[in-house]
Image 1: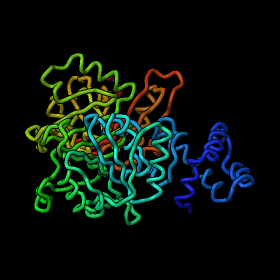
Image 2: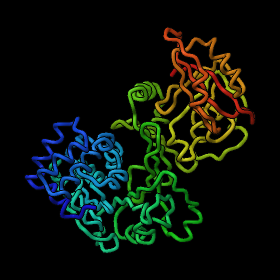
Image 3: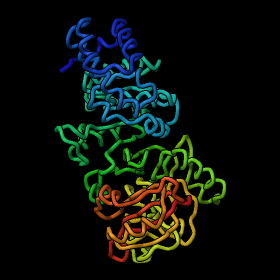
Image 4: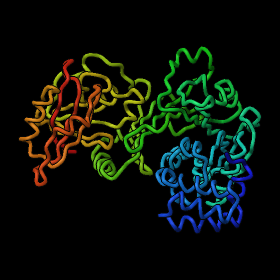
Length: 429
């Protein structure tokens, strides 16, 4: 719909004055805005401003100072959010040269530049390059931008690479290495021409590294999963970066207010030898497991009935397939399956874990649940499910609430000993 000249026009003095005026009127409706702009501007420029105005809602959830950014819808959807980009920029040491290949609209490039790195941004899409140039200028950042394919990029051996290959090259979202653009062979070739690499992949990408090693001489030295606001945002594969130990798998969680308090309590009381495996910094908490600490599942990992307390934990742990290792590290058990809830006789404060005291365990039967809920005198209900397909919205409709009830209660729907159960509980940590 729009070409590179249209996006280039957004950086002109004329366009910037109009944009500043528009963003000062945040309640303006798109239809009214388009009608007004068409009386002042060519149709394509008017429509382009409306598109940028409509993207502000999503941009506010992804970046700081959203009014300083311009996007296409696809580049905004594919972009790293601000907190995750700032965190992954810490994987590189300041002063080094980093090539941000497949830079998109420049969110990761901006975070790398803010980190004090010399950033060379590369994308074969001319619109992406134009947006990265604008977004860098609007933030006062010095980023060199090159419009070219990854295959054509000449990397000096002392540089590092940050690469976010397109996972929608054929128009559909994919987690397969075989459908990346640039392709896996190109990524491996680039790896052989740099000091180190951070490769961004979809959270669901799964590879048998033993099988992969038959094709790739250097499988990833370390792997990391990053989660924010209860969802896994991305997976990272690393080579030649010292921040994460070789042979390690790391689960990283962005800290909100409750988990920040838990992190402070955890680090204040936990032993120094375990502190080497866990770290809260820059608003993130990390659990790192080296090869010998990654445990497979066996019957000793499972509990068929919950103990006094049950817990839900951050999805980065599950995405990294570290549930068993995580439970073993802290002396907990998993309920019923490798993706199930945790259980323990006593809760241990941990930033990645929410602990609940068990009040009652019932069959997942609507009448019995409704009867118990009526007597529970709860102000609010939180419903969660793990390992079951449960219509939580339908279940919520049968739960009574009391304006002046005694507590906020949670129902965890799960399997116990192969049976579907509802665990009534109250959060304690």
